[in-house]
Length: 257
Image (cartoon, rainbow, N blue to C red; front, side, top):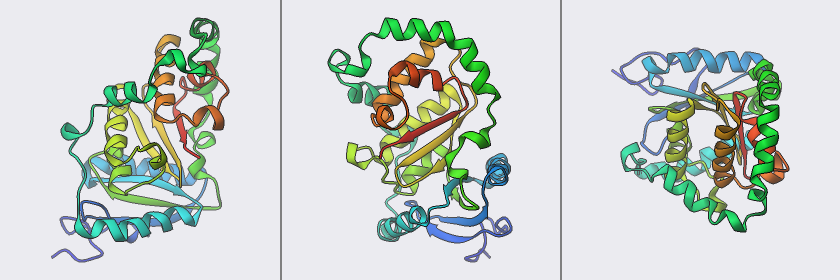
């Protein structure tokens, strides 16, 4: 018989994990406080490898207690009726969403002078890729910062479902909610093997198994990132070419603050 401390099927949760909240599907999620830095990333990686067997996706929620407090507060209200989230085939079209968000490129200052930025990136691509490939993941992921961090386990088909299942509100000021996050993250998972690794109050991080291979592909992806999170130009880089350069690495950062 399943109990409140057991996973579906009656198995025990990993050591140290305690029941946390219920997702919008009404399923139990779990959380645990672990040492920060490289040990937290190692824990995430080990739990990620088990996902095909457990159905639990790990996500780092960082060291700020407000993150888990806000998620808990929202889910306590919203998950009571178990509204669920869209299946991927019923979610919005990611390419259509991205095209809608980007609007008219001719009217956007960050999309001006594309040929010059692209030519510079083509010239520097090999050196940038070499540098970013050598950077350890633990030096890039911001959700690892702190003496201790919270890691959650969420019943999900993949990381692309987690923001929707947790009613994450990081991009709500742009009318981007669960269905839109689900669609875009699944699209990027299929194309680039992007996997959700961390969530903050208004920050999202992914690790990427198949980054763009050339400057043109990186530039096209940068435009998609900018459409999804326009604040990148204020919080991360000064120009589209600089954003494209970061995408040769394994770490993607979105910050809507």
